[in-house]
Length: 386
Image (cartoon, rainbow, N blue to C red):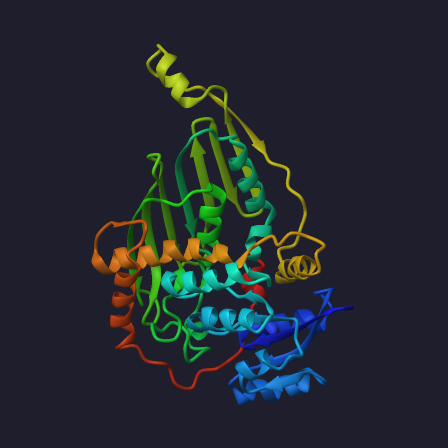
């Protein structure tokens, strides 16, 4: 085949970006062949914007059309597992937007389907291709920090105005989205956190504030504390209401620390391991000392098309799939645990009680309401180009 035939389910904010990438040739081994959306206005837009592309009111009809090689799932979060499973069962390769879903039990079923399929399943965690985080992952895996002692991520540059939340009827509702900043913006950071550390925490204590800064049902301000099996600890602070915001990720270990802020990565290299210094130094006041090095990074733009191009290459047998979709459950486990901890006002231990989480979520869904009169499609480039 010359190019892989793609269909896109959902052309809201994210789906529209994928439409544009395919139409503009940014996905070099893929072509846009079909679109499915339940919104007549978006299909009317697609009819004008995408001549020759098949349009469907039903995603199921598109999936079973027999005209596609792969689909991109870009619908509201609850529906991600549903359409991933349907796509895989129809013999299609599937790329899902983040998050993997709203609750881990649903995502676990999706992952089981993916594991027994001979088709590829990817997830759009494009920030794993960010040179800063890619290098942090590499250095931690190589052991340059020694035993990890503490992590701290303050990620408050996800600013969103009320107009953003009003742009979708389902947005920022328990019924439509299943959460706020943890489910919409921070899936990237929660994924990176566990991916870079190479480990999940064993305990989570979080404080999630619903509608603290916006007229929304869900959380827009979160502070969380975690503990790891080896005794390391971590903090995670996020909001969509700080401007200017901060994005600073720090990991400290026995041999030094890494600090990522903006597009820079600094490596503080201890001249002696802290534990060895602690055990051998006899001078009272004193530290082992350290050198600071700015870590050289590859130059690469962080784009959705980068992930899509790898996805296509993996389907064609040219590369390994860089970001398997089954990885999505890990970051979602962290957000589910943070929500549950806040709802119950206590520390939550992992593995998560998935049924308890669903029961607590459903209490909130029961009183949740879609907003009226919203439905704007926003240009998301300003969000990605941080």
